[in-house]
Length: 75
Image 1 (cartoon, one colour):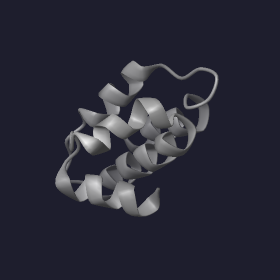
Image 2 (cartoon, rainbow, N blue to C red):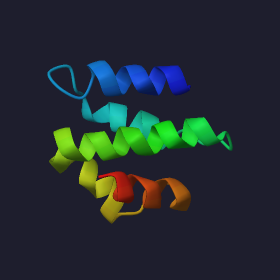
Image 3 (spheres, rainbow, N blue to C red):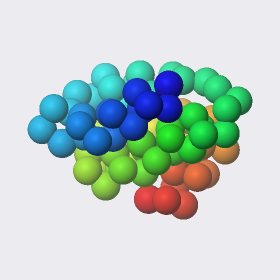
């Protein structure tokens, strides 16, 4: 999962971006620390590159609380 999210960050937040990718990552639930960290890096980066699409996930608190807070700190 971590590798896949990393690929989404690297290659699919610019020209190849699709809003459904945000939903895909937001739906991941894991207790693995590094998977959770990658999810919050994804959303922090998405807020920088695709703000209009990503910020509703933060405003509506659609992520797990820990991930939500970390994504905000990183953004």
